[in-house]
Amino acid sequence: MSIQRTFSIIKPDATARNITGKVNAKIEAAGLRIIAQKRLLLSEKQAAGFYAVHKNRPFYSDLVKFMMSGPVVVQVLEGENAIAAYRKVMGATNPSEADSGTIRAEFALSIDANTVHGSDAVDTASDEIKFFFTEEELVG
Ligand code: CMP
Image (cartoon, rainbow, N blue to C red; front, side, top):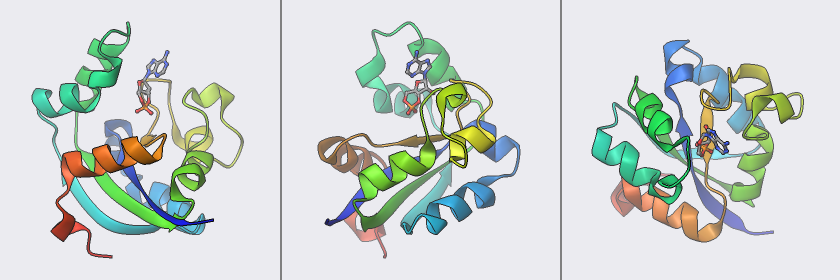
């Protein structure tokens, strides 16, 4: 077990429904601490750049458009095995496959409007945190 940091986005479907507090209640109940947070409207450059790893996938253009369709909340989470712990509380990418009690099972509307994003590995967590936050903004 180790203390890790991971990166989280609360997506536009959640800000539109005013449920960011409900999402974060689940994150905090899972033992994760929100050590940095900001609410942003992503530019096309930010949305396309953040998801560049998916640029050859058929869903890329819809994904970029969706992520620009309303405010998002970007966050850094810290805790024991934070990367796996957050992925567990998020549930599967497709909400129809998400375990009950997970964020996506309770709140997601579709595989596109799936309420949250979370890093999948140590390297991507580090890159994704740096994409949106400076070291000084990780306030604990
Ligand atoms: P996220 O974890 O933010 O990473 C990429 C996003 O692409 C994913 O959540 C989904 O919202 C979206 N997406 C749409 N279709 C697919 C798909 N077939 N496989 C994976 N992700 C998809």
